[in-house]
Length: 365
Image (cartoon, rainbow, N blue to C red):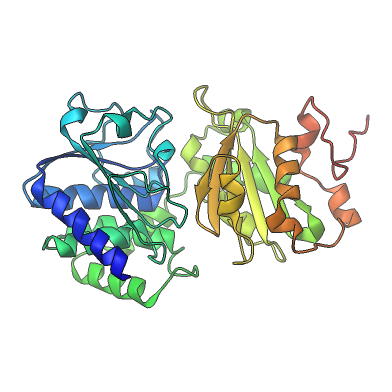
């Protein structure tokens, strides 16, 4: 940590020591790091005798692969006494990630922002943002160490989930020596790595495989194969019997395409509330910062993993992705004929004709 980050760590620890009542929150549509950090922070504060509740926005189902974690006490409504509680936001790049309605941040007595996203907006009264950390779970471990909280098997398991998922099973570029040392510490403290692996990576519902098949079938390439895009429609979830969290991880199959530098999965959530479409972005090269792309649409994330929401038609979303400077500044070669013949068919389903020429006009049978 830098000197500033060390000072921020101490400031966060001081708040957590001195206050007694907390609400710990993570972003909606949570991933492994969000849930692991949420539970790890809650258990750590409770070990100090604090009064702590957990909150997640939305009423969507918990991702199946994380249901083995003890998250049964998570609330989906803000506590009635939120004005009397300190809000601890974990893994939230900005206050919009907590909930569409900013009431949580504005109503809380005090706000502590703990994160590792480099584009974090520092919306807290106290902020501890460590972009070089592998995960927010790693930052939570630093906080618990500062608070002299001993690692229990339950805390270790929660933090390990955050660590292993955000590093892509220790394969992404954010897998640092510190991350590997932390993994060893968490295993020594009782984290069941085999059990976690089975739950997170080997508990795959058949409906999720069918959803993956649809996304792979619709995948199309642009810019000489450097941009890969696919999509899932609302009816896909209904027809295969899949819940929204089942789309988690599908984009990683797209990222594996040879020659791809940026990939996008556009999905229509199988529920009526919220934005019409959610877009996940991944990049395979540091030169392509997908968080910068996402921020232009009100989203955010990491350089190599980010996302945003939009009500725009799929064709317009793809047009936006294609004209982004992070792709275009690399002076990519013109689109080859193969890509012209194999675009994501989603654009053809839109009533508004795309302004770009990469999607051919729909041929009549």
